[in-house]
Length: 345
Ligand code: B12
Image (cartoon, rainbow, N blue to C red):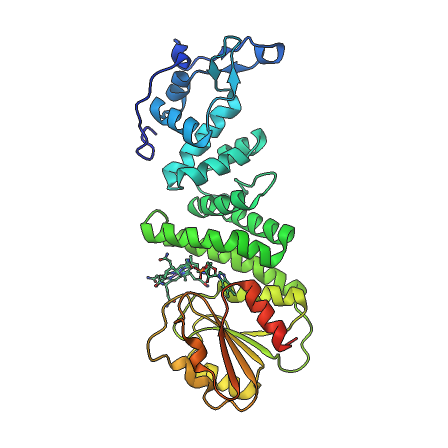
């Protein structure tokens, strides 16, 4: 491992280059505890981990991945934990995790966490690798991206489970999961991450949301008044699971039909169930003459259709008629508010 992210900037050498013996550690001599602690200068670390010195300096300057100790003379030194952090950073960056995200993940881990992460094999063996002791939203987002890149299924499950348990479905989705999915989508688009990673991140998330739904689903009393589906042709269905889980926690029953519901199927369902609210998701742009709307032509009872996702045109309200109200919702919270307003519980 010698090249990293093209960040080989040439900066003046400093006193840390003083380790003459290559990979040999020195002791800091600054206090009693440090005496027993071997430390390294940047040159020695570079030789030891196979990452160029200018890269190490850039990581220190830009991402605070660097030496945490000083000798009695004030020279900066890497201790064993610092070196582990550099190694993990290098591994994540080599796999395609953006340096900023990789650094936040590496910085979030303590010595034990770093040891566990570095002991893990290249691909997951079922053991979680990257989970930090405390999962702040920004770290959780980066950890999801890193774990997806690493194909680390266990860490994905753990981070999803912990963020949902800690902040609840709505905040976990809005603050962590949705931004992480957007990053994963962008990384996939840029070619930095494979479709395998995208699928794994999706599968693990779906499993966690299903677990919430399974344990919190309210008992059904007749046909649910709330129906969820992704529009005809649109496979993206994770937001439906988030909605279903959030509604389950609120005690609101719903019927979720998942992704790519054919327009004819939606029309049949609407006719038979006569729901009060239909939520339609679309990640992909809807076609100009969208057959989905035909499902609501013959509605003769009060029905609110809420649409969410970037695929919908802005002017959806024009689809409203005497019995039908069509509105766009921009967040999971908006949607839940809309469902409550219709009194669909
Ligand atoms: C997971 C995923 C998949 C999974 C879906 C699995 C599943 N069961 O859902 C798989 C791998 C199958 C997949 C397939 C495809 N995908 Co895809 N996918 C994604 C990914 C990473 C997340 C989707 C998601 O859940 N988004 C929901 C939230 C997280 O994202 P958002 O809509 O941008 O969120 C904004 C708002 O909608 C709102 N919001 C967020 N959450 C919620 C919730 C509610 C209730 C509301 C109201 C609002 C709201 O807040 C956000 C900020 O404004 C996105 C990336 C992305 N940014 O969405 C790509 C993405 C949607 N996919 C994309 C593409 C191109 C595809 C494919 C065509 C790829 C292919 N060539 O096969 C196919 C589509 C097949 C089809 N016919 O639908 C593109 C779409 C680009 C476009 N607009 O045309 C994206 C954007 C990736 C990218 N950056 O290019 N995908």
